[in-house]
Length: 309
Image (cartoon, rainbow, N blue to C red):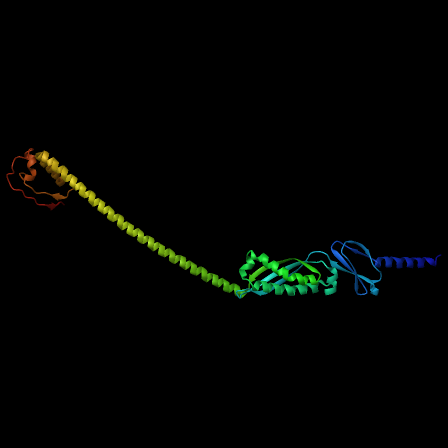
């Protein structure tokens, strides 16, 4: 009995090893390809516990795991030329999924890097073609979405031949190259300076035109005001003469007296700096001796103006 124990343990170990080699697990993020003697025997796409022939090292059943989730690869610093002839740098990425594990194994031996290398080449060509048919502004406008759909359409057939499905293609960056950026800056600067000069010239022209209009209106307003003042002054003089005429005709003596009093006031006011040298018996002072002004003057009059010191 004691000699049988080692044999039993060895038999159990062999059975456990065979059982372990015959079982494999597929989780929810994986697909499994069962390969028997170099040929695809089965593809497991659902998560769970599965069985296969043991001893994969003897080229029997072996399992290759393939990712069953959305994957992404980036393509950076692609130099593309737009329809205007200028060059731009573009960064893009592709989101894809392995949907046909059998074909993926047959075409690229299940190597993800080989599949992405093929897609990168095709993506590079598609981006160059799509950008080459359009101007730079298209990538910054609503047309960008249609450009990405067009690129994805060009990748679809190649991806399908690899067992892949393209979910999305996106542009992360579209920038001017260094030399084009400097040229564009200089061009925009020159355009803005020219636009500023044009606006300034139009402003000066409008200002001169408005100043000329204002000056002409000032001259017209002054001329009209001068004319109206002359008319009013003439009408006032005429009215004054008419009133004086009516007053003289009604009472010539009083009018004569009023005129003399006005002359006294104007000639002898304190604001006057003129000295009058007259005879007291002159005609000018006749109302001082005779309120009625009827007494004739006895002597001649003499008026000598002099400047008061």
